[in-house]
Image 1: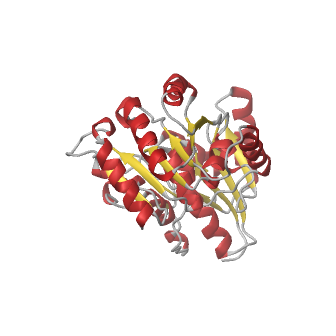
Image 2: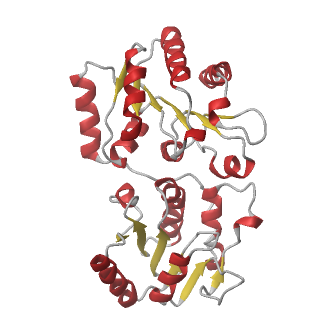
Image 3: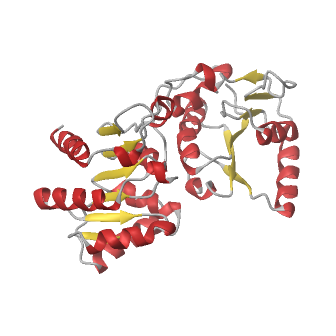
Length: 323
């Protein structure tokens, strides 16, 4: 394909953007001269501010003045291709696609509304059991682009890496560590504090490992409680997603509930043990893509993360270590 000016839309959560990043690699592999733009949201754009396969990022902040400027930019840039890999209805997707007026556009055409995109993506109802990164790459098929590498693509910010190394030195900590993420999106996707404490103590006693904890600000009290009752454990502040990416990239292993950390680990092929709800459509869409991974679903259909037994997690951890 001759060089094109291409916009990819990813306005969702952090994890959603991570899983869209294989598209950027595939476009640049198709033709390194493609000019690849990203339309991101206010909560996820920092993740790719120095991405090797993105030439420019446009941010939808939802603030009136900046939104007007964004609409003007999208309307006057004249993109050759417009790619929105979302596989379900979205008013924002339809709105921005109409503004962009690209010659060729790929996205979800709601069967109950007028056609907006020139080429349709497969709806989510036809992709049960298909991983989200593969679903994203399906959006390139109408363009004749077929990619086999489904692993996400992220980079480590050099300044963030320096902050991590400075933190480890200041705390007198080894450069090798396990990263433990305790924060889930909702209570049903988090694990009990006492189970985290037991898990860390039992792994630490056997394998003599140091643990870095990371969490959302709302879970700081839980993290502090874990620190008080475990040895060889430190809380690593991650004020931005950039610092979380760095902590994942340099970790020897990740222990986490199902959240964007799972997909960030996949980008760096970091070994991981992840805890998931027992809902097949969720698990099959978001399981980790690291070569060494153990995914634990709660026992029983519909069961939530708090129901996952400690011994089950320990067993899978040891299995991973012996792999």
